Length: 224
Image (cartoon, rainbow, N blue to C red; front, side, top):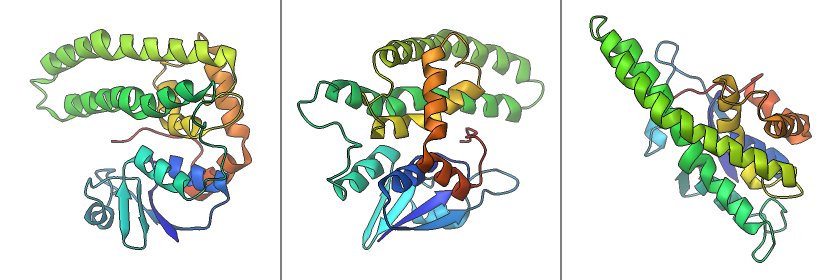
């Protein structure tokens, strides 16, 4: 049986939601963040080669990385409709968003979070300079790329309601963390009504509600 080693309020929420949506049997081990650093505790870092969540164990298998875990779990549920099958008209759309979730959108969110941490931790006399430099990097690199991604998402959701096409798919599950984070960071606003409507549909899913209850969260907050 799969054990999800789940760090509260983290990217591993997606795996929790996936397991709930599948109705899979699993064990849940919840780790609390360090009260001072807000990072994963030593027990989780010792388990994962990356020292971060999500992580699953399944017998002798230990696996990290969100999308690798999603694929591994879906391999065990071939009857699931959460994958868009080969040859389907929505296959390319599904693959793009499944991998853009981590490869593009999440990378930008994490980069911005790291910038904010650096600004807060440098000596006070260096802070104005570092803030100016990283502010320029944010404006010239992160903001335009996030805008482009959200514009593509808005256009795609104008055609079909889910990132996998006509129904909830693993791409939607992979995207929930960066899309919630984009909303919290004010990238995702009234200019993207289709994306906001997608978030409402996600929040109304019973499996999402069940996962949220187990996570003890009201909303996803991006933490490094």
